[in-house]
Image (tube, rainbow, N blue to C red):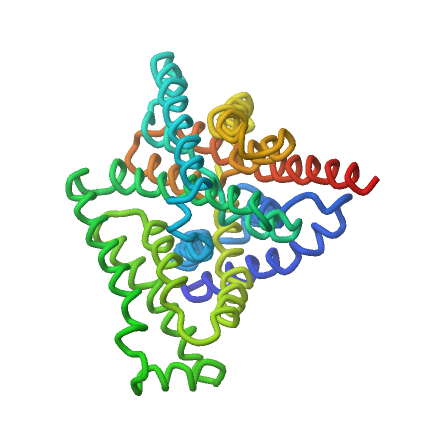
Length: 390
């Protein structure tokens, strides 16, 4: 069997898992399990450790583009001016507390010999999966009003700053070179935001807008160019590709010409329709399930630490901004994470600084957080709504 046939067969199985995921969620009581969990479990099922009908290596490129789309769409939700507002300032304070807690907790684990990947695991405990949470939050109307702004601020901080930390401390270049690359890629992203002003009223803009809804799909094609250009630059400079994708999403908010809403719908269709499911199914295919089965307490440990280190600071920081119920929801929302955990474990395994059992347990804890924490946040909000209706 040649590589092309292997890749197509693997993509077929991945597409079947992605297509069945909504039906599986619909069959479950309460529909409380996010599709991302079903995609990961489906990946485990068809992967080498279960049925063995797929070859993960044959779809790595598709998976990386899917990871890029996760953070492109997350970055698109971020308004940079939010960090000058109260929601952004409180999010930064809460993240800073999480960093301090993570350093203390992981330091203790490092001294006792439980972990050896001090930096990757410390960063992991400060992350929030805004990209994964967005569909859940949208479906449950949790992005509206002031609470929604606080949620977006906390989620964006929990993605952007860990991504920057990954680029600086875990890239293939030195920290100084990584900082310089960050400045360069930020400048490149800024230049993209100036493009609409430079072409306004010119023939280029007319061509873009004329083909926006035609077969040429000009705005969509150039958005993909923007995404891939920043991904390529980030990869060449030894930065994590999620940084390029996140910046692309931020730029896209300022750059997109024409009907922005229409473009967002097209990106959702491409991302959530194909590439993002490929990433999550691939993550399941490569998850070391045997390590989790051999040391299940490690998974429980990381699951609890995600809530304690990333979630609990919300109860303190937002005490004057949100009601007790909303703070409880924020605690569960900020403690939800997964995509960055996958990226961090891959980095830790590649450079030999992370135990395989810890990598698997960390991802497993992230899977469990995606299952439990959003459902808990929705349940808290539902109880509040029922009381108000009475």
